[in-house]
Image (cartoon, rainbow, N blue to C red; front, side, top):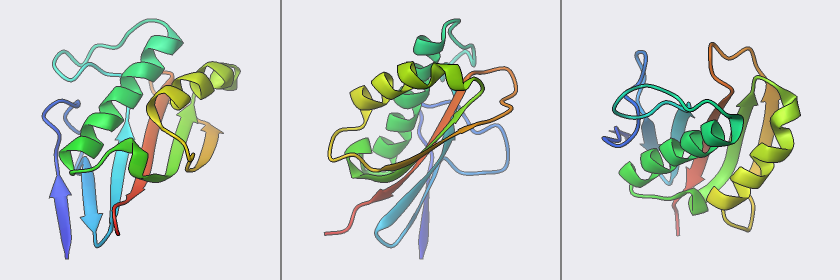
Length: 124
């Protein structure tokens, strides 16, 4: 059985997908971008965009009854790999240790600098 979640305090999905889906003890979080949940605007600088993307991901995790402390995998998509060091610092602020596995790739993002998704494990 799968259960679908939407977060009121994250931007509404921009397409036909859910914010999060739980299947058993695993929760899959859709990619979150640096858009304000109410205005859909985004901050100017990369560091601010990264923080907002992670805050949105955190909001989706919370809506599904979990947190980023439950992350077993995080995917980070950067428009510019030159932002990697700053992203890594912001990542450490939002995702506590022990660190999950992570993949970071350069991506042709449409008008924003970062997107993040995650897989959470909430079993006992």
